Image (cartoon, rainbow, N blue to C red; front, side, top):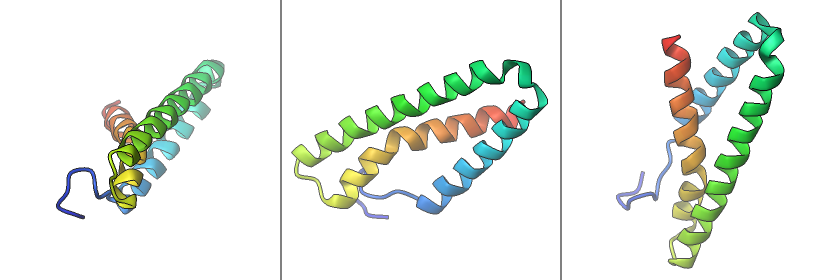
Length: 93
């Protein structure tokens, strides 16, 4: 990780967290298929929002002249925050 703010991303941790979120949410969906449609819609919208937020964050970082690693970290930041929050929520209940 670089010393500059936003210049590094812990990709292995992000991948591990995303895998666990996928596994735990899949188990929840299989356990209650009646509510799966609404939950899948909510999850899709959540991903679209994280993508759009990341796109704009990357654009702002690029316009500031940040290096490519910082631009990529800015792009991934909204998704990383969402995945981390989802994992905390799923672990609790």
